[in-house]
Length: 175
Image 1 (cartoon, helix red, strand yellow):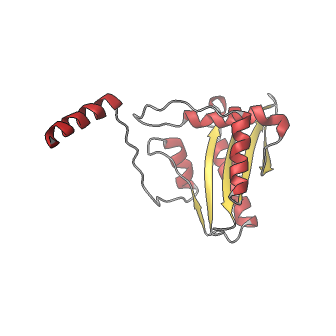
Image 2: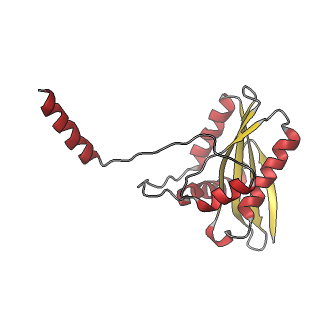
Image 3: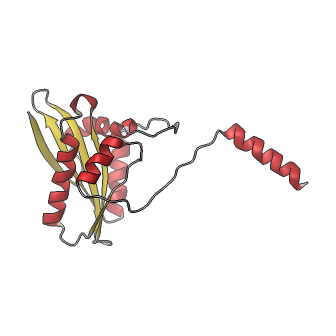
């Protein structure tokens, strides 16, 4: 049995390490052929992110799902809203731990967030989110929830030795 929970703003101190573990779900996103190192947030880094959001006038809402039988987090989603741009809300990370996938939890989390936004932030006209073309699971959820492409982005990666070789060849041509 799963239970939906909510945090408005700062994460509770007594759960900060478990929340840091939740943030590690970003490392499980499909990234295609990119070779990217995992990122692990510490509780101090999470608090710094919170301080930066607050300094910019942003508000963070976080929904989470707990597996009541195991008494542990199964997944989460977060959204960022700023009163300086009241018509736009950023739907941020949504992640579910592998043992809990394919149970509809990601969809439940995002739908709960969108429902809250529609009820409590009527000034929001656009909800923006992002995901890689290779992330079929999240694309399916976003499409079902009515998201449509808004902007495309390409990330490029090159080995530094290849770049150095190219630059060296180019500097020889300029002499």
